[in-house]
Length: 439
Image 1 (cartoon, one colour):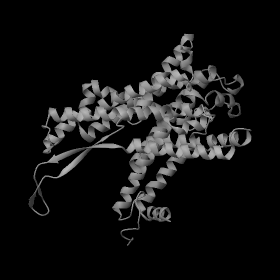
Image 2 (cartoon, helix red, strand yellow):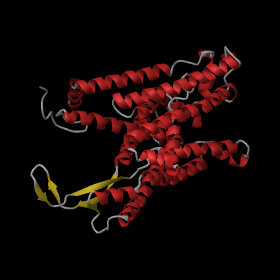
Image 3 (tube, one colour):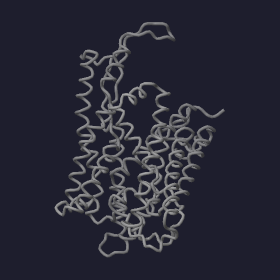
Image 4 (spheres, one colour):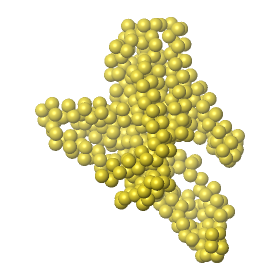
């Protein structure tokens, strides 16, 4: 009943209703375009491509594009080139003075960085598009009869359409962010992941209920229970913060024109400040040993995503990149200077460099358990597979997919809550009744 009332409240707020409908409409357009194959490819011949991209790293890329990768769709590259460009620009911001200046220029600087990211996205797509075409023609086992057109015509049209598809996906994501609800880029990735959920679950359900000794319905119920527990742990990882007490000097309350004692507030330092970026970085690096394993037989164990040594190395890289990405994104020196300018200080710590060192020390300590937790969730699908769970269903038990879905869900709910609370309604994560009825 509470959920139904909240949904009614959401529908009664005109601005929120329009934003939600726009978001759903743009997502529907994205999903429709993901079904459109490249001209010159016979869609009835794509079963071989689907089989070769259902597991391993290719399976993960396919999941992020909602299956467009395995359908040779015009959206086959999805939004991933934009993600790559964003990461490159963010990392370059550490070393390139021009980008550092733009980061400090406020809104105008942000617009220029966005424009740079867009152009870099096109450049990356122009590199990835011919690589993808080469792969489907050689590595992924697509039969020759699947190509209705060949030669320069097919190559040129496919590269143009794949680039246009990525640019269109980027545009959709930006429109959702500006005019809709939630982070558009993250929502498109999440929708692509969720699109694989029904098929993965049904495949697991059929496997458990039709095969003798597979466990039947009881095993399915147990898997669902474990899945909910993992989701709960993921929510805790995404939302966990370490509150650092901050004291502010005496200040004047403008409304009452009176001097009051300094208020105590908190700086929330996230347990997992790096988000999913360490996993993305680690997976990008893992392409290298997988490629090397084809030439050096001693590295063959690194080709198995569910193997021991692959996951040991994967977890180690996640821990390393957690520290690396946290260090470059959470600038404790800037936080300390900001506190100093606003008259704030950590009790017992001098403002300035000592405050920066204190924050850095706290951040280093909480990043370690956060990175271990993140690494554990990331390799959990490989562990789940060892208990007879289908690979496609095990993917939803952890890793990038689950953490992205949880993070996007929390962010979207928080945005909806802000609209509800501003309109005098209780939020989605509140209990009780409306604090004020509609006029």
